[in-house]
Image 1 (tube, helix red, strand yellow):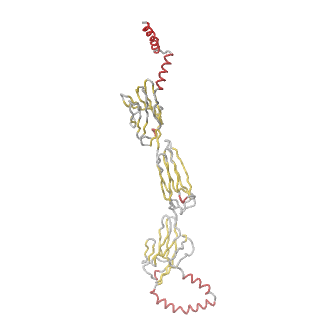
Image 2 (image 1 turned 90 degrees about the vertical axis):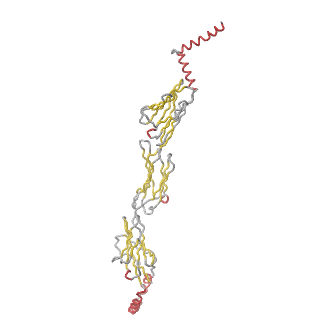
Length: 408
């Protein structure tokens, strides 16, 4: 009996302590705090982390815990721009399932497992407005609640564009090309590859911050437009965290008037007119003092003679013209054919005495010595040379001409 009595007496204090904990005494409060702390220490932390998603794609919001406590509910709340802090938008319960708050947003999909204490969500078609903090809350017994915050960041690839200009040749700096990386997040980097234009152009940068957190970056090539720039290739290189490096290309265009006009002999019956200009010059053939002979054909920039006929001899002009100016040159064409041999012989017999007398006169007057070198220079012109005597339009001076002689 004593042994059992001892046993009974030893249990009584424990029963009294249990009844005492039902009250709000200080000993009971301390005991409850101890039990809760011990239970919390036995529970692992909630697994979650920061998430980054591309605009328009989907984001996985992970949230999972490992604990032996009983799970009664999973709650999701968000703190985003334009919304109230800690806005509860979704509740997950074992019997009821998903319950949306403040309007249904079916872009959120529960892809976790309640029994495994996995509250992971999938958010489809993300927008910039979805960026913010998302909190996953587990309601556990007896430990209470556990939560973890995941920050969702949205990446936005830039809208790229390369625009080129067509300035007129001049001495003032003007834009030549502009490269734009618009509305990107984070901001994109823009740089140029300019090749032979190094030292002739410079870059002007501009950045614009938008209210939605995106940035537009622009870079413009500026320089004095010269005809040597025309046709030069430049490249714009755009780099960003959201996309691979992108290269855009353009050809610099500078408008200018025709340069020096050249006339080239392509054959004994064909002449070609050439001049560089942007846009390409219109080449116009004409005959000084009279219209072109009907038998002479103009094919593009080429003047074609039907035969070596004396009546086709004369002073011909080629004019190069575009909206920004014009230039021209003259060419004296002289045909001498074998059909005129008799006429030349008769003319020679009649003029021979005159030439002899004139020669004696010039010799005695010492003028022949100065005239002979000039005569030789005039007769030694080569018909296959580049005949160019271009002059600005409107300049008041006699045209320089080159005589072109054809003979059988």
